[in-house]
Amino acid sequence: MAAVRAELKRGRLAAEIAAAYVRARRELRRAPITTVVERLRAGRSPQRVENPYALEEARCLGRAVVRALTMVPGDTRCLRRSLVLMQLLAKRGISAQLVIGTRTSPDFLAHAWIEHDGEPVLSPGDGSFGRLVTL
Image (cartoon, rainbow, N blue to C red; front, side):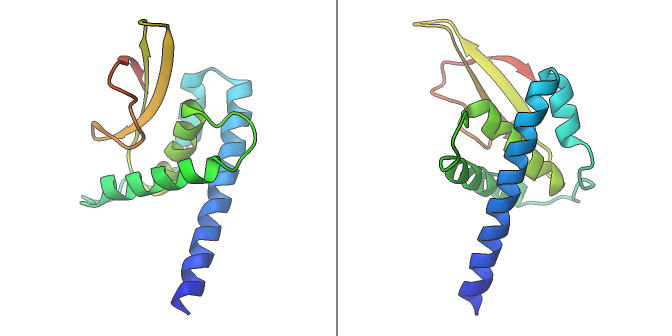
């Protein structure tokens, strides 16, 4: 019975991730990133009272997002993964900041990740990215 409940829970989470991905893609086509972030956070649950496990929960959801989006065709790189995770965290009342960083050497490259209380939830890359903006 417990295995069935766990499987149903994973299925619901996978469906939630897929819906969040579709919404993030749609929003990115319609508006600038600052507006997209604002819209994706709208309707979030009230901030939980001192959840000591918020970072652990955020990282667990981050791993689930990365795993689930590897199965999705299309662009599922860092920005989309980050926007999907941000939606899931907002729904659960966990604060999240979208960080966009860049590096110029050896080649120009941009990277996006999510942080909770200054701690990375999704990989911030290899340490060569300087923060460009935090939303």
